[in-house]
Image (cartoon, rainbow, N blue to C red; front, side, top):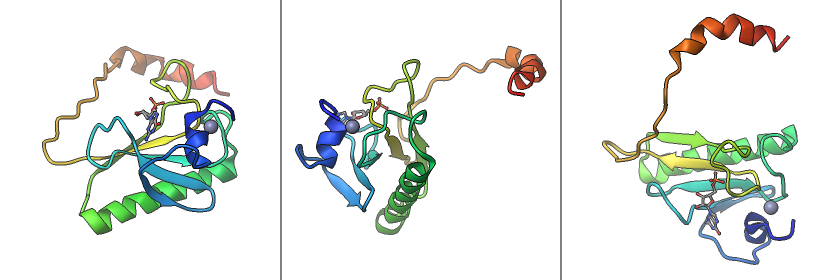
Length: 133
Ligand code: 5GP
Ligand code: ZN
């Protein structure tokens, strides 16, 4: 895909700090890291996000995420990791080439994710689930 920064990384047109590479995916360090070893895992082929990625490719991405987790556990002794993905305009998705963030976490690190718990939604669960039928 033209003008896609992650396609350019996958095609080695621009450089990245590679953690690992396999046939279908790349893992590289995020250049705006939130923690040491903040890593992005992408498929080499362009898909925007969770809404268009084929299941088979997503499984490859998942396997690569797992490889990175095991690598960090083995080489760095990391025992805590958060994994997240932004898909779509109402999230923080800025690069529309599917990617998962892998965020190693450390004791008393300063990372904070602000959330507002919506207890008012609990009473709406039955109605919400009915809409899925
Ligand atoms: P998003 O907000 O879309 O979930 O995350 C996109 C991430 O890609 C951001 O954390 C940003 O720092 C990272 N990023 C954007 N451009 C580049 C780049 O050219 N190289 C690397 N390594 N990371 C990038
Ligand atoms: Zn792309």
